[in-house]
Image (tube, rainbow, N blue to C red; front, side):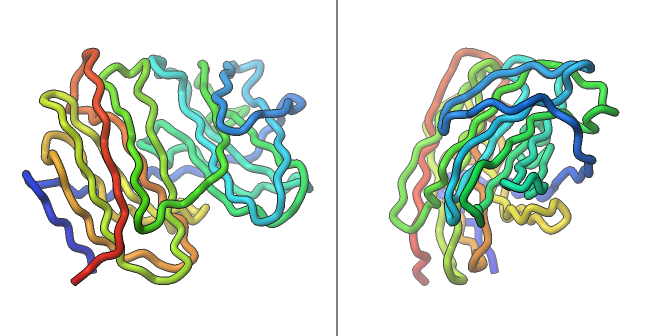
Length: 254
């Protein structure tokens, strides 16, 4: 059962995902990547994949984000995570808003993992352009968590903020959202992340001019990653305004 309670205006809920399947591609020799630091690169027809490596321990949870460089629109990005033996653990090209690639995984082994930054269809693709890429350690949100997500009208600075929920048992939590702005509107989406696009589920999507604050009550399954991401809505238009979306998680009370 899912309830959506608006604290001001009505909210819109939209379900949808883009599904794609891409074979592995060859890539240049990897270089070390630091956690929580954006790296930049450029993919072309001659150099359509880059690899980066990092050390991790069994039980670590990491998330990887890849986007076209803000302000550019020519590259269809794809990111893959390979285990220490070179096996393909996960691959994505459209989880975040049809333009961003995203992976979250709890790692099973100690060792050196590889991130592959490439484009849709790899060697057979035709998109080219610059990208940004980041890996972070994940601290899932739990009841009592309070975070903020900045948004901006300018596409050159607006990068989605991504948060993860990972309940250890079946739960019903309330996610409260709020912001203050006359012309800038957020897009807020909560989706499951299973590593299989066919099995992912969008629990809610709030988009556009429809709310100033909202509380969303939703049921979450044990041992499932849920990804909450926030970015500026298409309905915001263009300009220099910036705002902050506040987010809090709590236990749901009847």
